[in-house]
Image 1 (spheres, rainbow, N blue to C red):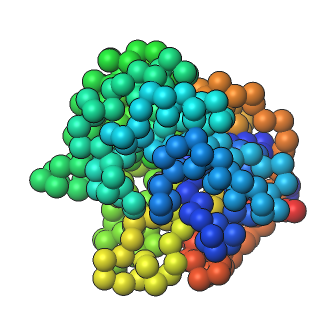
Image 2: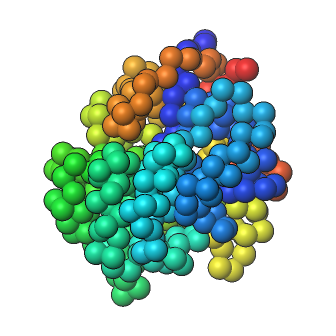
Length: 334
Ligand SMILES: [Zn+2]
């Protein structure tokens, strides 16, 4: 059986640079028309000039009509003039990492008041604010970091009522409730957080390829995330947070956080939505709600999936994909 689904938007993607970028870009460009490209590369994307150079690097690969939607990282060095220049260069959003919460976030924010001038300008320029929503306080227990961050979200949503805010890769019931509460806030949900709980990371043997930030939480949280994703609420849309690391950076002491799900994104989403709600809801989740929130036209193209068992490869160019070695029920047909 074949199913046509929308070739839509991945509203949260890490592509890295250089060799990894070259290895991974095709997985997303073949399944999605657009993706919001995260700026926490090494070195980070901080200015309009950085974003243009990064976009040029992405476009030099055979990406067809794929459109990278560029972001800059907002730090306490980001001035209103830098925001204005970024907007002029086509940058759609500013990403804020609290200090030290994930890969390459050493230069993140310790005090949000320090970036209020930049946020005010983003509000003026209708540039979105994307938040990694975890408390940077090392005293906060890892499973509570998202919940503790929600008071910061409330302050930002209240202080900048015209600023569109995306709480990225939410993992908890509390986050779902907070997103529903604030009119100017939406959220991305990954495919892996619709499937995993903490048990899949450390419940039996350690599974480094299921380890990401924010870490997968309790079964009740997963249930609430699924309800949010599959129920047709326009505040929740797809952001895959595919975050490739070389195998040896994952399978070691001090292993990196990040799940490389780009190769399996659409087959996995199809499997989840087929089980819980259906493909019309999937199309809204990947091509309507995110585009609407970003103020972008909805994509028109479709892509064909076959309902056919697909054993997921163990590695692509030394990077282990999510669901490696497992069999998915759908696969993308070229
Ligand atoms: Zn991310």
